[in-house]
Length: 127
Image 1 (tube, rainbow, N blue to C red):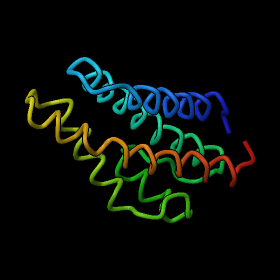
Image 2: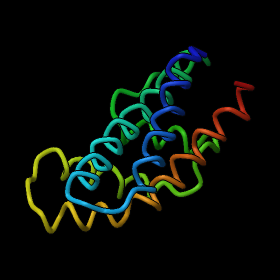
Image 3: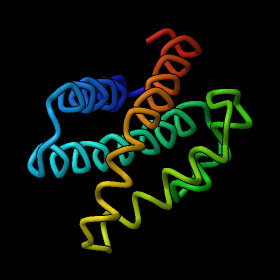
């Protein structure tokens, strides 16, 4: 597996965790949401790279990648990833303070889920 992608994914988790430790301000909230978007993108691209290296059919969308990761036992709750995907799309296409606050409130849980995925990838592929 291309460990650079996985390392970038893991670093994005560290970056998200770091900003979530800060006191909430509008700037911290917006930064956390942006870091979440990056982390989310790197999560499914890491899965995509993993499938490629395994010689499996490569997923071409986050939804398909998360389904494949679920089948491989890398994620436990496929619905949580569907929720994350929906919120990722909302953060990209909707500019609304209330929505930003709602999503920010969920980032701690998303961080745990993404950390679990990164650990499972690391364990399964010894990286």
